[in-house]
Length: 237
Image 1 (cartoon, rainbow, N blue to C red):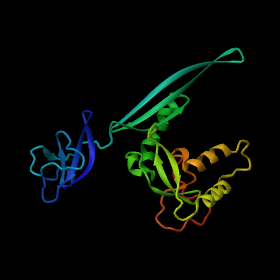
Image 2: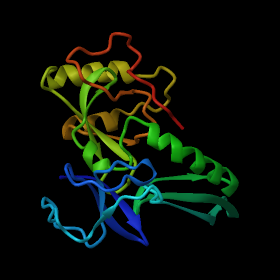
Image 3: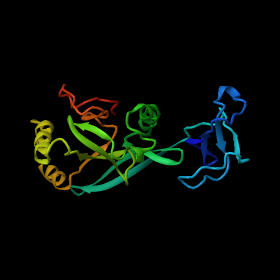
Image 4: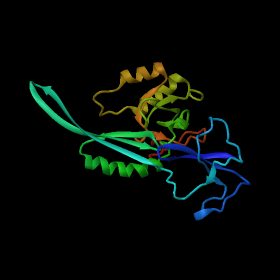
């Protein structure tokens, strides 16, 4: 028996299991070994009794992704040059199966609604697991073609930090290469202070995992990509 995934029914989470040797009729072409444990979840690290009466056949009528998209238009005010200045923006929170996984801020609510619809697909297709971000902690990546790890934010779902990997490149050399590759001649405000802070803490506070133009998410080989492009450019905003 193994736990496959969670589903949400009337705001309560339930586990779905695959149980080899225990089969139902396979309604609507559902796998015959998939069972919904339709009662309180068992403690983490344990399994329910295989003969439990709470197992019911998994149904194709259960939606695995229960979205809750929340929009809020906010008017703001500030005084600038002794004048009242007003503006507005729209905050959007994207909740999936009762968990906040992504948020963004934009102008008009109409644009936010269209963007949220697009993101429902784009987040699912992205190499980063936005739906179970805790599982991405420590994931090996190439950052500016340098070995590094991912650290999901504890406070802001959808944001990440970068932890340098010094196992193959010494720290001094790693940061020297990173500074050379990330330098932009047209940058009027170079981030020297942030680089020094990152060097001291061995941590780069990157931000949105969806804005990943400098990340190659698949560090399966020891050799770095040779094209100098910064790696795979997955979907960006």
